[in-house]
Amino acid sequence: MPASDPALAGAAAVALTGLAEAYRPRPITPLMPWRYPHRLVKPYIITARGRQWDDQMVETVQGTAGRQLDFDDAMGAVGLAVVVLHLGDDGIYLVVQSWSRDFQSRLSIFSGLDVDDLRPAPIGAGTCVWEQEVLSHERTSYVSHILSGSVDVDAWLDDALDTRPQPNYDGIPSGT
Image (cartoon, rainbow, N blue to C red; front, side, top):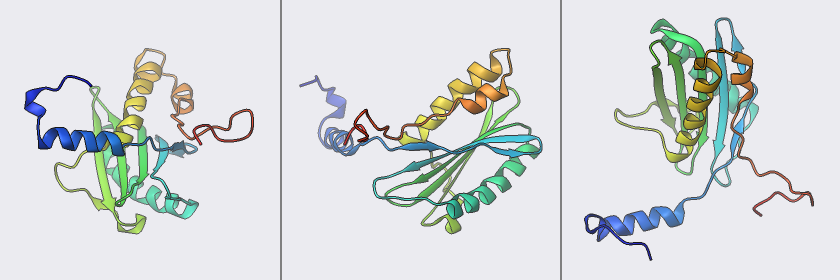
């Protein structure tokens, strides 16, 4: 058993143990890039167990994200962005990240019970561990393909995170 810090005794230790026991990776599905005049977007979908998505949901989210990206453009975005639609256990989340000048990004989060119901998330809300997995990958991709000096937009677009279960040699998805 790992050593415990006394500061994390009692309720905090129980809470961490519960989180650790409940955590399960979620499949991350990259979609084909969205191409607009002066903007390229890498969209992703994260699905909790039992959640499904369809093209209509993506189209609706594309409109919501597009309005945010228009605003980001006016605030100095450089034309590269990432959109994450997360179908969680307790609702739907939309994360829109635009890369901007001076090595910064603009991050907007929307939440709701349905894609038609997405509203700006409450002040102080942040991304969850599954959304951060995408954003971490995208930060590395941006540095590698854009800031490394080559400015290889095609390589950036091709560098998509995909954690969906892959079939093994028997045709059965691994992990089942």
